[in-house]
Amino acid sequence: MTPETQLSPSQTTPQSPKSSGGYLPHIARILMGLAFVVFGLNGFFQFIPPPKTPMPEGAAALSTAFMKSGYMFPFVMGTQLVVGVLLLLNRFVPLALVIIMPVLLHILAFHIFLQPAGIVPGAVLMVLELYLACCYRRVYVPILTARAVPNA
Image 1: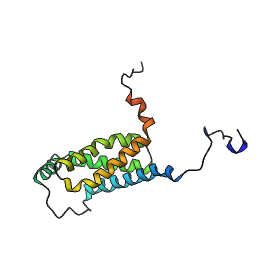
Image 2 (image 1 turned 120 degrees about the vertical axis):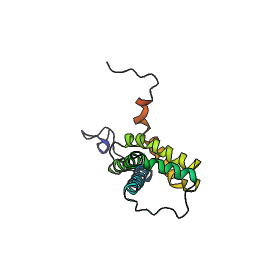
Image 3 (image 1 turned 180 degrees about the horizontal axis):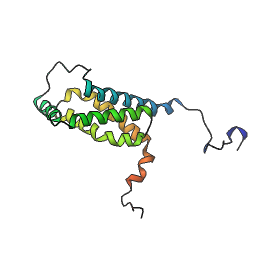
C-alpha cells in the first residue's frame, strides 16, 4: 500500500471520495423517515386536513373499524412514528424497514382495493422501502437462510 492509501487502525478499507450516488440511500432514508413521522403524528393530532371527497363505503368501514377497535389505529400510527424516528436517527434501519413493510403492504392494498385515488404516497414509500431494502440486502442474508440451525 502506498502512504496515501494506508489504513488507520480503525479503518478496514481505504477511504474513497463519495460519489453523488453514495448519498441516495441517505436521502431515501430521510425522506421515508420524515413521511412516517408526519403521518404517524397526524394519526394522533389530525393536523393534515381530510380529503374533500368522501371515502368509498368499504374504505370508510375499514377506517372506522380500525378506530373503534381502540388499539389498532393508535398501534399502526405509533409504529409509523417509531419507524420514522429510527430512520431519521439512522438507528436500527434494517429492523425499521422490516417492521414497516406490513404497514406499507396494507397501505397499498387499502388503496388498490378500496380507495385508488390516494395511492401515490404509499407507492412512493414502497419504492423507497424496496430501494433501501436493496441497499441493506447484505444485512438480511442471515435471516433468509432456508434451514437455519439454532445455537445450542
